[in-house]
Length: 192
Image (cartoon, rainbow, N blue to C red; front, top):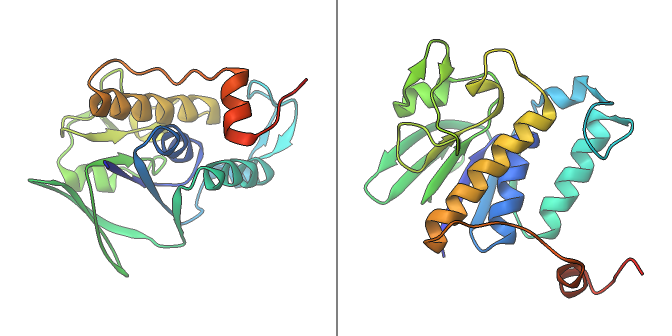
């Protein structure tokens, strides 16, 4: 089974984890809980009328946990390197191998620079799928946008990265579109 390492546990990172894990790619998230969401209150996120950013993060973490995402809470990534087999992610606790990497570290672009990703001015250069110039490495959110730092945009970036990874793994364009029957199968209940 393929695997993806996601560095950063805000809306972008957790969205990438949700899409990939739910659809058969093992996701590991390294999260030091430095997300800007702890300073936010959501009024402009579709589907959420008003919610504290920290409460939103707890909901999002519970959601990815329910799909079996491995969250390495508090473990800081110190380096990432492309290898012949994918990527090696280093922390103070050890090294981890994966087929893909998603950088979701907000405006901190240090890991993207160390990995050798191309930049466009001050931001990491990505294509529409959020893939960087380094094959199978993705960058999301504030690191790829000079001024558009919104939770919903970051979540969409993470979803785009996740869907592109799934497209590569499945060998055809992949959509994650669920129906009520899917919810019944996953959770054993419906909204009747």
